[in-house]
Length: 438
Image (cartoon, rainbow, N blue to C red):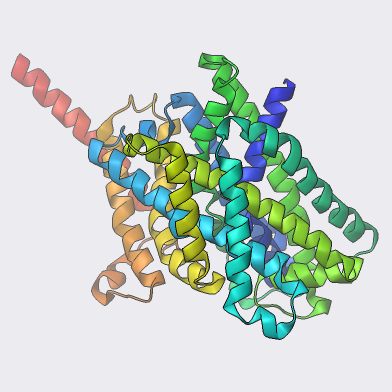
């Protein structure tokens, strides 16, 4: 494993590790209490395992998200990437990085009256997305800027918190909240949706592949290098999640909090005093900045393919301005709106990744993809409407009979059934063709 692979791996970790990754593990830790490790195991599946599988799938195809989606159907190859890039990009993912950077990197240092005003958020997001825009103008330097500079700084800050927490623990692991008493692993699995990392991996994958190809690496060597970089990113993510969850689980003596950001603020203040806010603020801003850079770069590179007449720099500028505007709506509103959308499209991304990994085994049959994704979408769309507060009672009564539906995994069995039905259709059509020819 060479230095370039390590740099790409650290860049990939930084691209993944953004706003949600800092907020959700501490929240899970505090809420899960004694069930923190089963809950985090489920979180690791959606927060570490699936993103890595997505990177591997894209490395094998070498064609990015479009190469994966076109295996299903040409229309799906157009529609799904647009929805995905919109969700992880200017509608939710990118604005959220600016919001979290403000909430955790700026608000703790503002007077309470000033923090309640809209102007500080507006000014902060102007600076934040201005810096993001500048760093995105030359994507060929992403590895040097992120992998060799920003990521080590971020890991050093998180490492300092980890060491201090190990030497001087805040307290014992607390009690388990009611939502985590039954099936904590499944609950953690669903919590992993909110990081958007699996969706992000489908977008970041082409950025990583391009970063590797810049050195003239292609073919199997490129695939191997991308997989190794993904392993480095996964190990770093798992280690940081472990620390953050532990901090949340042992924070009960500090009182309850509404979100993971408040938990981290309280924990770091307890460990380091007033200087802890500066330390945490620096970590948050770095994490959010690297993710914002990766998302805008990935969305802009895709945008150039869709709109070849518009330059990369113009698309970056438009994304930065639009994200700035959306960010000023507020963090809570963004999270509220994003949950139904993520609930609807996340299962589709998971099924697409799994099918891509078994692509040779199913001999690339489009019917297998279509059957599995069609039944998955039928269930996940209802889940999305339910998350938005829209319930269709007649359909709900039918879907409740599905295994694990109440846990949010009702799409799993239909996905498997759809794949087998699609495979069966190919066998029937093949036999019909043979009879016709004979």
